[in-house]
Image 1 (cartoon, rainbow, N blue to C red):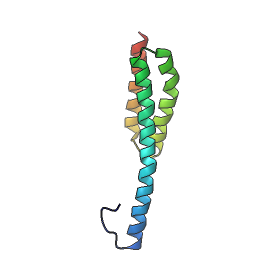
Image 2 (cartoon, one colour; image 1 turned 135 degrees about the horizontal axis):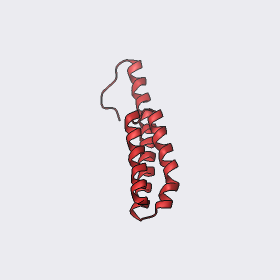
Image 3 (cartoon, rainbow, N blue to C red; image 1 turned 90 degrees about the horizontal axis):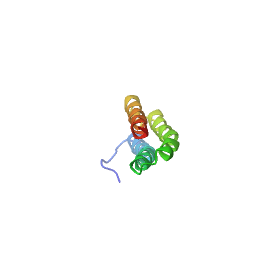
Image 4 (tube, rainbow, N blue to C red; image 1 turned 45 degrees about the vertical axis):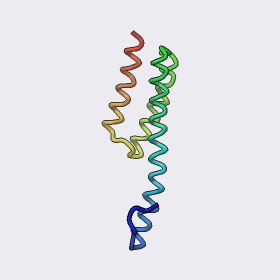
Length: 92
């Protein structure tokens, strides 16, 4: 479980805290990935209206990941911009 053997009690607590945060960060990252993927799959299947309905959920997942520090602000903006551009391209 641990990569390094912590000596002080604060270092041991930091390892526990880091492991707990890692779970939450992974959960956010997976939600972000799933939301983006489902939108892109809808676009690949030529379902533009379905993709437009999925856009708010994808934006929400991106914003939450940004807010909690999983991704940086510019990365969040870039992802949102590319998803919106993909829908605009698909529309015609």
